[in-house]
Image 1 (tube, helix red, strand yellow):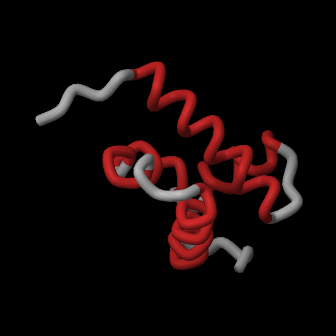
Image 2: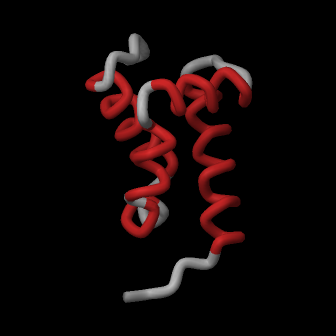
Length: 75
């Protein structure tokens, strides 16, 4: 199994939070809190190995759908 570079993973997650916020007109803090509340942060952490190979549009689409399935209101 490939070793994950912690710095790369952290930078990717920060960028994903930012892009999610831009898509849904949220500040970075609001974006983080929403993703944390509706399990999007768990998804980013757990599936980093696959998600970091996707475009940020696809990542944001996936996060939006995943959070919605977990009770989030954003579509």
